[in-house]
Length: 591
Image 1: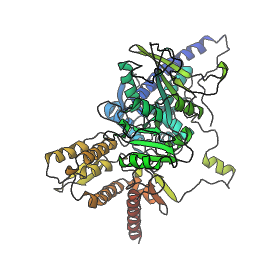
Image 2: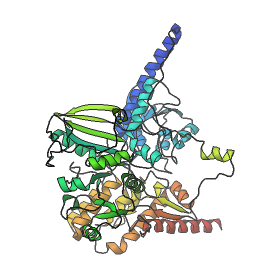
Image 3: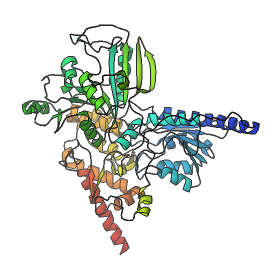
Image 4: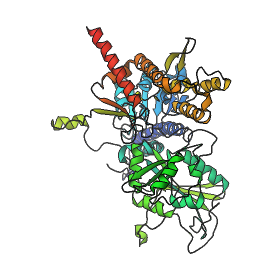
């Protein structure tokens, strides 16, 4: 996979005829406007960061031929209304013959064509795409579909090229760095953050470190945490600082906390073992302190053992677990190990205007084996920002990988060598909505209509909304009624699940008494409704005939398949049951 270099060649020409200068000026002015709209789309795409778990970031701007911005939208969370549809609804009749600017090629859910259909039906005449989708199973699909419908599609870097266009394209890459890294490198996008004094210390010689940075800087760190799926610390940080590692933003997404410890030399009591707000995972060497593992497990802490514990292995595991972004807040030893392993992509350094000295005071990064300054790691795209009295310095340790294919497509390869065929598995995994077959997820954005207790039909934004609300239906308690309404009005399936699970855990008396015996049927009825009213989903399900369907959640051992296949996979079972029923109906109709 090639690496993307954000450099442009210089023009050596010293003379151009006047008519060429005029043409260039027109192009530059046009490109400046195009670039501004794309940058705005990228800015919109980032608006939900911290409020929902990381997901591919989509933003859309609808602009008329006169340059008027008629509508805007962005994807709030997986399983919510597409950015393009929001922008079209905002623009109304102004959408006809207008241009849509999107930072990322439409396609947040495999098999779902809502965004493309909305653009075509609204009469959009042109779509400018900041970058093609980085995921192979989605890349190019929307571009081809739009062009087949007569819509002009211009992709930055392909159909539009100039220095200002390349800078706009770069903003699209940066806002979706996590999904790019996941696709190209098969590891989550990792950010290393540390706060240090002006003389490069992260704590006094005694180990005391509260506080190096100011209050405004610490608030910014809470925001940065919220942009991640997980926060990683080492055993030293747990022993020395006893951190909570919460986002502390009064609601919204809370990243899981991960402790890396080879020996499990950890305290029996720690803030990270309090799971009332968010879960904790401890990753360790296989066989380490079995008795302590049992103690942590009794508190609800998840233990994951590795034959060889190192940052690379942990990142590959988190990739398989569905993580897009990871935030490292560890000490110098683990930081050095992570950098040496090549899994750190970006660095946030908070430099406080303080000096504490100390020969033995720790520094943010431990031994990297460098003996000459020429070996120093230079940051790319460095940014500086003053936050209160502190200075934030950020930059990339490695360039973002190039998402442009450097080998022929599968079809082209097959034409060259007929013996090469795509790998076909008899097992189909699905998990996140943006994965292949992500439409099978109960989190996908497919509203359903289901009858309530009185037989009246109500619309639910997703299967997950309906499922979570049913936990409290029929309970004679105003609080339970309020729970149902809160879940129904949740902005995303993720939020619906968070509300339902939280109430179930904190107030179990509000859950209907027969829930354990009816929850499978509740999910079945909701899934049947979904796959009955959306023909393309029904077709997709039928196309999997002969394959085993597995919900690939590594931590849900009831609905999912589990980490090592130990889960019950009830969601996959229900889908296979529905597939069998639909196939039977098709056979009867054919007869």
